[in-house]
Amino acid sequence: MPLLEVENVVSGYGRTDVLHGVSISVERDEIVTIIGPNGAGKSTLFKTIMGYLIPSSGKILFSEEDVTQLKPNQKVEKGIAYVPQLDNTFPSLTILENLEMGAFSKDKEALQNGIKTAYDTFPILSERKNQRARTLSGGQRQMLAMSMALMTEPALLLLDEPSAGLSPKVAEEVFNQIQSLHQKGIGILIIEQDAHRSLSISDRGYVLALGQNHFDGSADKILSDDQIREAFLGG
Image 1 (tube, helix red, strand yellow):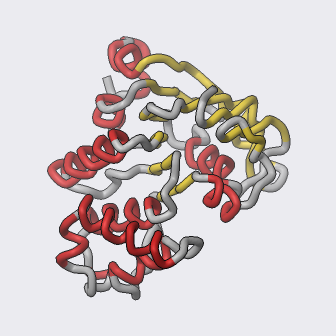
Image 2 (cartoon, one colour):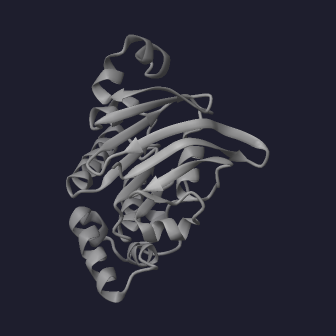
């Protein structure tokens, strides 16, 4: 069974539905990328998966358990972690303090293990552990945000625009780290403006348009499809 299954989800804000029966899945050993134009409902889908929004219909299964109605903290405890595009660190806290905040639900031993893993994965964080997050570069903040999410030892990581605002060189470094995390057995679901880069490291992809599934298939198939490339990948 898939690690994550989203089945015919209808969701939005108040009386305004943004998602109109969206379905996706992520296997335990996959990286999956979601692409689509602005307003397609990509971020709304992530917020619904995490429990910030409760769907009016449809179902969300995680490890075969129905988690549709669970709150965000409950989904974190189940093994889902989310790195939003914006406001994903605590600017006034140091790197170490941010990591400690990321492990709010863990005991002391798990905290220390998580910090060691973060420092091993992103050595720059160890070098600057007493530096406040607001003083970090965009790439360093993104690495910190991902490390905070990993402090909960998730089985599934949701990344919303991980390369937003980064230089091509730093974005490449971030995506290299995403691949490294995947090799450690974490399922990864990505929304990404640089669709080519994200699909190039993905197993499968989904194309959303107007809050509905438009296309899904292997990442290679999406990258090679002339119509999708013209409509969604900038030719």
